[in-house]
Length: 165
Image (cartoon, rainbow, N blue to C red):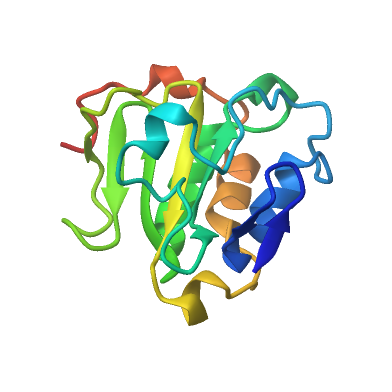
């Protein structure tokens, strides 16, 4: 597990590569981090959320700010994670859509939560410690393939809300 120095809570080990990006130790050090986060705010703390520490005191969620101008297209990142079918993923939320590894696995569906996640993507990892603490790098090869074949990066907000229903 990882100790979040800012908030003093433990984070699932599988979020370590994502945490490095959040800290600016990535290919996009100047990116906007205003919607980045792990621990839930007051609203989250009154609900069931992976942003809250679980029974083991571990936070199993992270938000990553959408900032394509500075190298982080949150929707493309979410799509690459979906393509990876990584067994550590519980669900992702991006651009008013949710995809789960359990419920209608790997199919984007409409997300009707309070926050549509248009300015960031959300990742929650599974409950099993041996999986959520797995620190293997995330397979983002689909992202690399898309970047190599696509000369332009469309904004995540251009994805129609009806996509994937």
